[in-house]
Image (cartoon, rainbow over all chains, first blue to last red):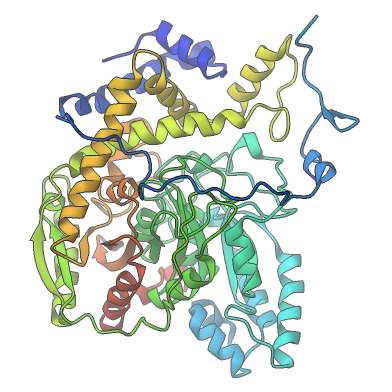
Length: 95
Length: 489
């Protein structure tokens, strides 16, 4: 199945990623070829086959709920561009 | 000891040389740092070189050795793929998105190797977020293949492979999601092992596709790979998919005979698509193993041709979730000039990610989106089960599975960049092991058009020992792994 320009724009919205107008045609072509390529899976008979999410079919391991980490906020926040009193700043969300 | 000998030595030989006081760790580190500054540029193998830190650590290692202290990797050099977090040192994942990211901690792999005494010389170039098979998607530019600078070294761990093949460093770490260790190892003529899923901790390894990603090593001999794997593997509380299985003494058991070992040769791998000379090299390698007492049995993996489309659904879906964390708020690239939060996110991600990463995120978003989830993602998970079952059936008859690592030797930089499908098909022989979580290794098995090609061995879950024994036996009888590209001798 090939994808059109509108679908690509919608995927860009869902992915929260700007795609420039002059990039769109290339993305349409390449993504369409990928979708057409993976479409061959549709022909495979998988009735009664369990989907496989993990290569070793392991359950989730649990541990006792105790503190294992110490406070490294200052060190971690060295990577942030906009910090005020230990808080991350973003554009205003609520008026 | 003349400097040109140090650069060609394996980790095991360097270890012995240091213990016999033929040279010091500092001499080794300085020799290699000089080589990196002379050749690193032409190969573009490194993103960061940690020279000063390495020299300090080498001096410390020499002091420890002088008072009789020892550790398995004390004073030995290596490099890390720039996807393993290193405390206080740039970890970019070769992306503009992380061009300024300084991790506040070490990945478990880095920590384990450091605790064993290894010295890091730097962080190696790679495909952006490990998405690529040619090392051309890096924000820092393509890596070159030391056998021919106009060719790709493969990817995504191309920098690690190129650095080891050119004798800039004897060993390096890598990660393998669909072949990113084995394919570049084959295309640069070195040894590369991807362990069983869960064998090596993923903690601090920047995630691409969490159910497929696995860390491993590049080296110039199977013996060195065994030494390093033994030090980096093991259970880790910090990785919820790490498996609590004891780590065997890989190096100690490496000389075990392969007499009676049953090796399965996959019929489907020799269908159309495989270069004739590449096929010949693989068949000749199997004859060597047969002479050593292994039994070759033809087997089938009937669904293996579905592994590439299955992989591109599963890996893209996981990547689209994993990469949603890059929002410009807490770390990494942050766009300027935006009106609101939504535009802030869209600009940051639109400007911070490269074209291939964007395509994979969008593919993943598509296969997970309403109305398509069952048709693509769930379907791919079911086909993954079928492929995994094929391997299980095969392993009821054989101990190891053998075949080519790649369809052909190294290709030209730029040759496949316009056709994503052709690029993806380069991983046709390697992806199956990731889908099934099996260990796989590529070892050099000859040359086609003066370029190295690899033999791939795939083992049972946690069957690294027999992979290493078989590979080591092969390297005792052949010398492909000792070949060095002319300009890097």
